Image (cartoon, rainbow, N blue to C red; front, side):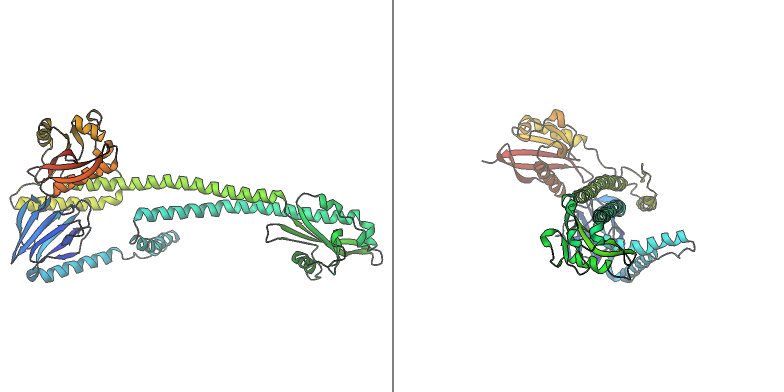
Length: 519
């Protein structure tokens, strides 16, 4: 029995058992050997096992199949041979001969992985301890979340939380301080009102004639929602509409308990109330001739709900929301910069690997400074060099060079001249090379403006472009055979046919697209 063991790439360490007969391998989940790796075609290759013999057959993949460093269409694989696919190297293993060795290799890889994530000794200095704790205590939690969620989504969530936390910790204290200043001023205002009552009613208070106290000016004061002037027994003296009633207001009772408590020794009680108002309670003092000193003769409890409080609440809310929106906009821009700044070198690396596998370059070199990728790039260059050495030892030379598209595109352009219906020609990169007048009228694409540009960029409808590109991919994966699809063009249903010319290197070099109106 044979199996495929991933010895390098994203699936390193995984094993895939092969049953007798044909085993399809590719990115499609329906394949016998599912390889979910970017760059691998949906049905990339097949491995046929017959007794003790293993055959490999490329199924018209986009990026090719390499056996021991050489691109192949069909070949016999032996135990220990290496099959190179995009971002993945598989080793063919005959289980009876190499079973123990394969298990040891996987165990070694697991040991290496444990060694990789083993914490370094904690430094002695404070700064080193902080960095160590961040790397080996906090980040493992983040890495654990990253195993469940895409890193870009996780980064966006963390950035949003950072923005909200920053605004909350910087703006809210300032707004809170401004409210405290406002509350303090209102408390002073309430104290002033109590002193004014004592001043203008000094004689009545001295005579203990609370019923003669004048508080009419409070009815006209802005922001005073209600007030009660009462004696120490909570009997209301003012306002006149509640004369001789006993107060049932909770704040009035609270003010009386606080202000008349000899242990607290305070003459002013202020508190924010549940409805957003501010309650101010103060003793009314009068001179007692018998005692020869001031004594409390009553309590004034005032509830303030000034317009300034409402304005301050609205202003605080508006400022917080404005800061949050501004921070969100900056965070979005920052996220885009970091995301694409990180993604660009990775895309470059992937593209250069594909070029190296196709024989277009011998080593990977980056135009961007990202030292974190240098070890990975060096490892890939070592693998490529080793593959070339193995290839040279077998006398096969370097990787097979990829053919140019030009001759194949020219052939299809000549073929299109005799077409009576709508047709267009795409190169291997799905760029528009030529399109006749009938196809221009159907698709709205003009050859003069679209030549050399990607079909995705020039198509008016992305659905149309996606349909054609999918048919191109299917044709390339099926040895250039005709693929058929349907799409509505100019208000009428049409059949879209795509076939491709396959090069000697096994890659699709040009695509011929025709449009046939449904009858």
